[in-house]
Image (cartoon, rainbow, N blue to C red; front, side, top):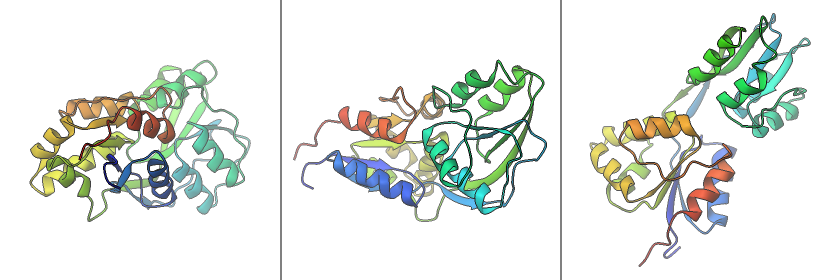
Length: 247
């Protein structure tokens, strides 16, 4: 693609990665697909005694459907539109989607109505504590069900090699775990320091403040945090902030 900027994307290796690669290509970049997350389902479903059930990902929506979950009058909450759409596609009604598509946004949407309520949070094993703590502070009785575990797939790390070689123009980190797995892949190859140095010359986009904090704690300077916590917003703003590579 000549002088198109190289942009690494770390989505799980399913339709999310395909869509992300297509979008980045449409934006005039050379996408580097380097999946940093693989999903291992637990087969669990939300407890049946909850007043509210909270979902935080499209994956969670699909897995509860596969596991045969049938809601029984609970208020169903989705962290954002992608999760809400996935729940609806599986035949579930969605009652609440916050204005801000983050854990803190979800807490803000629920905090005035969950005092004394039982809230079931159904998500991965790497969910942010912000959601649980915020709901508990609002007076809710909170229980977490782990629907799936997120592991780093074998063979990941091409983007870390490119970063270490100064050949990566931008990255789109979509969770704290993608940052951690990127660094773990780099360390496994013996190039962690070089990869972090390489990212200093790249445009680093992250999907939200928790991911930004993780990156900064690991010595990675963050350039882009979109106002809307979606991959589309992240991709557009990261690409806009990335100069065209000079030959």
